[in-house]
Image (cartoon, rainbow, N blue to C red; front, side):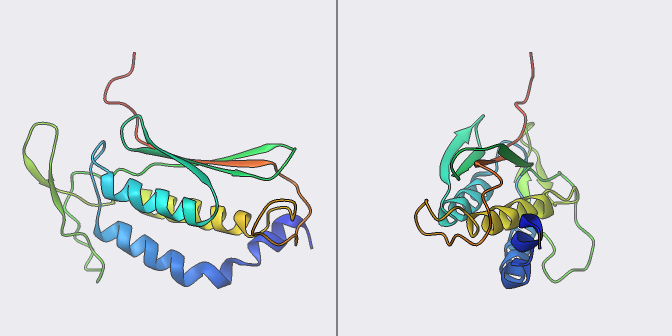
Length: 163
């Protein structure tokens, strides 16, 4: 079994937690540059997995670093913001959220863009990689040969204006 296959073999054990996390994000969408709750949830998960976390990047962005000794670096990135649209899916976890947009108008908000799934997938991979760090690092079993050194997780929106 390859290192990747061994890492991914742990997915069944985290699937229910990832689904619950996704549904929570889906029910609580936030517009761009307003993702305070979302950023807090993402940062909390990354910290739980042993990442060194920085928050407030570009406003509401989150970066998590998971070290694993020498070797290549893996970068995972996901957007966090939702769209100013009304969800009409009928899902039991559908968004009923509203927020004030940049113009001050109250608008419906939904993750019609899939960013809730992107964040859930990123955090799932972060968990799987954290569980397979080298034994030379604290709190993780040595079950997979070290094939990566650092994983950087970024979850941020672009600034409102770019130069």
